[in-house]
Length: 344
Image (cartoon, rainbow, N blue to C red; front, top):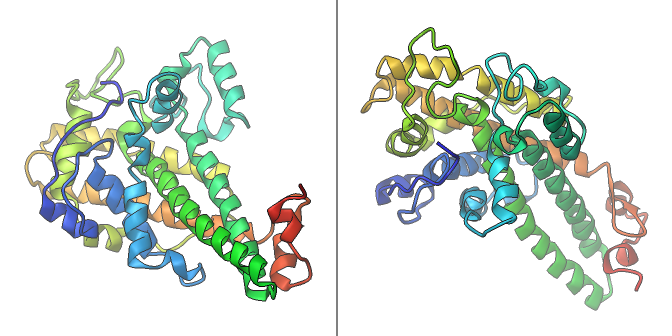
């Protein structure tokens, strides 16, 4: 199966369990899966982050924004081809992109263009390989930028005595808050994809390859049935939240963290197929239910951690032109007006 939308209706009751929204069309993890990842992550944010992020409305918004990269689909070319392959990276059983000719997550090139060139040189199809790790890293870097601007705007608004300038700072801060919620939602989508086993493997829709020593299913309905109907029927937001590991941002490095998470999810592929062979994803088998909620929790805890890490880093950077240091603006030693409004 190509990574195309799977249209399945979730019940109003399932939607209400998430964020009290009406039933919706399911795509990717399933709209329900992506939604619960975003909402659970937001509800788990520590109180060291700005208050606007820790409201029911913010959690609800991020839950909906978490679906956006699936709702972009169908815009036409080049939009679709460029973005559709952001949702996955197909690794073999040894953790190499596509096969032995591809690189590991530990050896990803610095730039996506270099990644594409390396795959092409190795004789591999870039579009079939996918570029999920770069989508995650790009999303995190965008979030860090918007956090940095928010810090400067918030500090400047609090100190500004000129009423016209203060109003501009306030308006731009509010715009930035909407951008930040969208940023987190987009990042949530890709980290959610990275928590779904089928989005990390060449076995993305039934077992692939010339050998199948354990006799795993080759059904091309495997992917869609798991992430759509089974997930929306059996996910439990309370279980997802309870299964999330504690916050972990010590020594955070976005490239290393992204690769490690993708490798961890790849490690669940064979267990998934063994469980599928044993009937764990039929009906309401508790083994399958536990598996899907654990994978959703893995996505949610990464969204929380990536968000906190982006906030932490944003205080150490510079923004605007001429550039001003965030820490100096927050300390009150620099006026950021020209850097933000523009010299011209």
